Length: 136
Image 1 (spheres, rainbow, N blue to C red):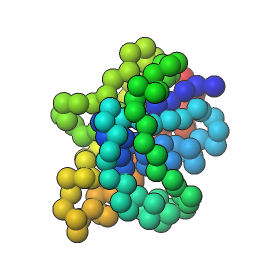
Image 2: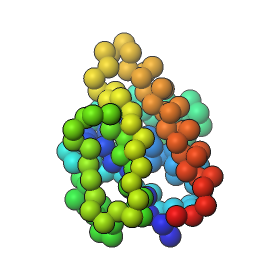
Image 3: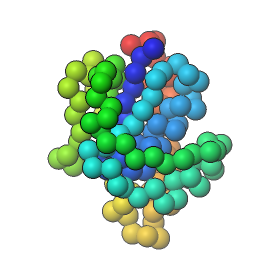
């Protein structure tokens, strides 16, 4: 089974939403995980944003990228913002894809839900494209 690892620096909302969306869309087609170099990003509101589109039962986790290196993924997906300067890299990944997303932790509190929805919707498009492709 092909292995996909989704990463961002803080293993926060972006990578965990992408993992949840891909799990739902892929239906067991891939082994899917997510991680970060310094896990600690806020997960506030993510469960609500995902439940709006029928992704229920989301349980946030914290996973350091060092625990996800062996074996290297077939596809490494980075979801950090353009030019962040700290996108995680995994040696040995067969392919790398960039799905850049803004950091929702930088949004003003009153705008966080809107930013999370925009990220979710962007990630859904990337996920839909990925699952329509032939196996890697």
